[in-house]
Image (cartoon, rainbow, N blue to C red; front, top):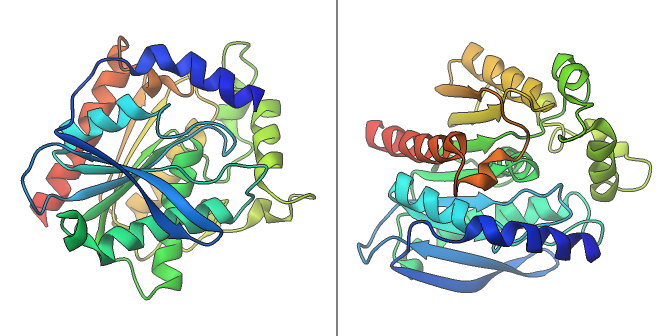
Length: 288
């Protein structure tokens, strides 16, 4: 609880200002262990807008729709879409795969009940940062495998996600920085999220690079900092998708650390990726 309170206090400064929605609706979606709070950002009154479901990061342990509020409002503007923030239950109280199931449940709910919310059921996007990017990719794969297909998902927006590479050059080069994320930090978050013994370390819905990425993969925008120890994950995912003919774009932002997209209030690299990722979603859905 102390860690969560400090995280919220630190993020408060960074989420002031930014684009203003026409309307914000806080509601709930039924999930596997109870209601999942969601926040809906509408850019205007135009009906039938496409939907980006955004899953916040924070090592599966901290964060909520408030800590990622500005990020979602920026994506609403650049993606010209309705954004739905998922306030999934956090670890260690809710361990894998509960947050995954909740994220997938929210995507399905808005696809199946689009008329209720005045949005389009098709050409949806799923996005997230860090642990949220892990959940976004995993939710896409879970929807594909468990619910008869995910052809209504047209894009993934994945910011510095963890996809299953816990070793490699980026960890050796970037994983010891005193002002960045260390391997000890990463393993601590994983230990909170996975059951004792961490038997799911190789589970293909956690270590998603282990999954079958040859089908059911929509277009993907990946963005990661040059100094991020998770850079290898984004590079590996990009190469795999590219090999299988998936439309994918990887942007490596020079000189920045993990979680830089929180700083869109003043960091040019964050502003750029928030704009470019939303525009990628627009291009994908309009080009289909």
